[in-house]
Length: 381
Image (cartoon, rainbow, N blue to C red):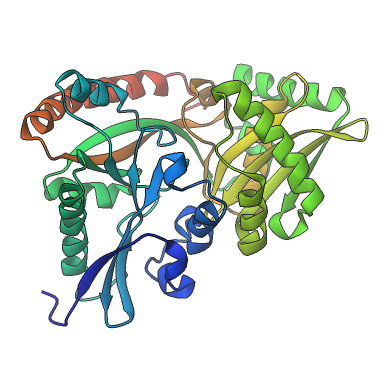
C-alpha cells in the first residue's frame, strides 16, 4: 500500500508535464507513448475537442514527482480508434441513452500495442496502478461518460484490467517475427516454393518499372521531403476515408522532436517522387503507419509497406514488424495472425452484461478465425 501522500489529477494538456518525467514512467521504447509523440498530436491540433478528442490525462503525483499516468481522452465519436464499437453506440441510442462522451486510454489514430498503464517498477507500483485505474472509472462517472475503454494495451495490462472487472476484447493483426534472418533471401528461404516465387515476382515488377527506393531516418528528412510525404498521405487518406486526420505540422514536429524513431521510405520514378511510407521504430520493433502514392504501380504498396520494412528489420536486428491494422493479404507475405487486446467497462450494468456475453462469443470466433488463417501462412513448417 502506498504510504506517502499521493494525489491523482486530470491534466488537459500533456505539455504541462515534464517530458523527461513522463518518458521515465515506462521502460518500453514504444515510440507512440512518448511525450514527444502525444504532445505533437495536441500541439498540431490533430487531437483537440474540435476533432472529437479531448485530452484528460490522469497522473499520480507526490508533491511535484510524477509517479504514474494513463494517457486519456474523452471521445465524441469512435473514429480513429480501430477497436470498433459503433454497434454498441447504436444500442445505446436505441435505448434512449447517450454513448458519447466515452473515456478511452489510447494513442490517437494508432492501432499499435503498447503500454497504457504507465507506472515504473517499484514496491508501490501495484497500489499506484490500482489507484489510477480506479480514478479513471471515477472520472468517467463524474463526467457522465458511458464507459471507459483501454485500447491496445499489452497482454500483461489486459490481464491486470480483467482481474479488476474489465471486459476483455480480442482483435487480430498480422505481425512479422525475425527468426535471426541474415538477409531477405534467407527470410524467403523459409517460404514454400510457390509463395517465395510470388514475392520475388512482386519485387521484380517494381525494379522493372524503374522505381528507385530510398530509406531515410528522421534526421535525414528535410522539410521539402515531409511536404512530399504529406502530399501522398493526404491524397490516399482522403480517397479512403474522406479526410486526413493528421497535419503536415504534426509530421514535421515528430520528425524534429523524435528523429530516432522515424523511418521514411520514398519511391522515385523518372526523377520524381511517386510514393512514400512512414514507419516508426523502437529498440526492437518497427511499426508501419502511413502510406500514399500518386500513380498506380504494380506491387509498389507491397514493396514500400512490407518488403522494405522487413529488410530494414533484418539489417537493424529488430525483432518484430507490425505493419498496421487489418489486411489478410499480409499472411502470404510473412505476417502471421497475432492477438491484440482491449479492455472495457460500462457504467450501465445492463449494457456491461450484454457486451460481456457478446465478447465471449466474439473471442471464440476470433480464435477459430486465427487458427484457420494460420493454415495459409507461407512458411514451410
